[in-house]
Length: 63
Image (cartoon, rainbow, N blue to C red; front, side, top):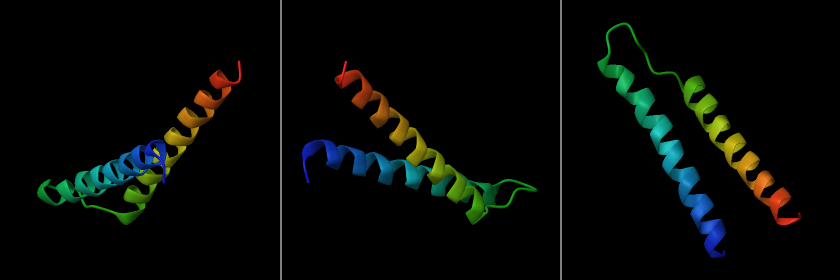
């Protein structure tokens, strides 16, 4: 695994942990409940954002 792949992997792990933590914090809020569906939506957004950024960097590199 090269350095770029490692950075992307660590970003994914960090952002997925953030999704889990923000949902977990809802346990402390009144009338809010954590849902696994919301964690999945956050993770899907993370993957989509990274794909868009990577796609954009590939487009710029080919110019």
